Image: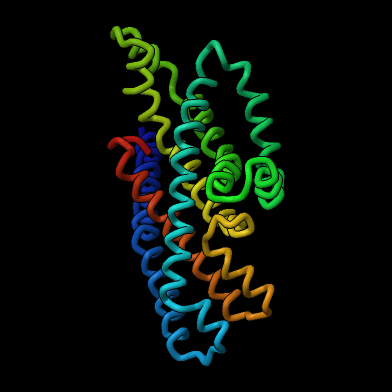
Length: 260
């Protein structure tokens, strides 16, 4: 009995620690981003910039490039979600489980390819522009969501699934009301990973005229203007942190109570 009480206490402590860690991240990440951006804004206002640097780091230019970067990320993420999650669900159904290994292996191979090479090759085939960038980035972000969807559904306790079927639920009801809610934390972890990957990889979209903050990095490298280069890298890092934070908030909002 005492051992059971000790184990229960340890589990409760772990749960409290997990909640505290999550709360710290939810509060700490926006504060960190605000401090970094505030420091960069102060530097921007006081730094002595030449004409090229001042033009590239003008507030209007920064806001336009950031908007393009975020829009590209959101569109790509939407494409990944509507393709990878249904594919993961399909590959966990009895009729298609044998295909899960080769499909994940193929997705692994696709993600192992350098993203810049993938973007350029698709641009040569599909042409330059936002559409090609979205397709390239969606291929790159597909694997984490697919893999976590499969793993999350496979980890659902099968006794709960059988109990739901015993209550007369259809296969679709079991998936919607039992399997997906229990697998959601694992799926959302994959979504957050894909979001951060896409934010970083979207920097290469500038090579095919799809816009984004990568233009600052390319300009900084090409013209040896390190203030532009560092500013671009810093803003991209902040955007990635904020996107990860938004994913955590969404995960908490969507995860049913009692599921962790």
